[in-house]
Image (cartoon, rainbow, N blue to C red; front, top):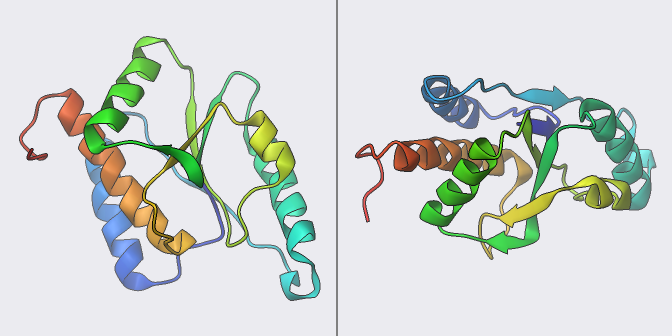
Length: 153
C-alpha cells in the first residue's frame, strides 16, 4: 500500500497495525508513506495534486500493477474484491500497489498510469480513515480466498 502523508490519529494507527500484522500471514505486505508536502497551504489544489503525483510515480515501477482507491472507481463487494485480488495473483502480478491519495485526490498523470480503480463506498471518508478501512478489506479478501471463517455472508 502506498499513501500520501502519515496517519496521525492513534486509534487509526492501532487498527491499521492489527490488520497489517494479520496480512503478513498471507502476503508480502508493506506500506510506504509519502510525506505530505511542505508549505502546502501556499499551493493551489492543482499544484498539490501535481507534486504529490510526481512523488507517487517515483515509487511505482514499470512492472507494477497500480490500483487507485478512488470515489469514481468500480464499486465491488468484499467477495468481488477478493475475486479481483485472486485473479491478479494468479496472473502473476509482480507487485500490486494500492494507492490512497491525499485530501485532493490524484493528478492526471497518476490516473493515466493507473491499471485500475476501486471505490470503497459511495460515501466519502477521510484519507486517513480509508487506510484502516482498506487494510481491513484487504485482510478480509485474503480470508475469503482461503475459505477462512472471518467473513460471514
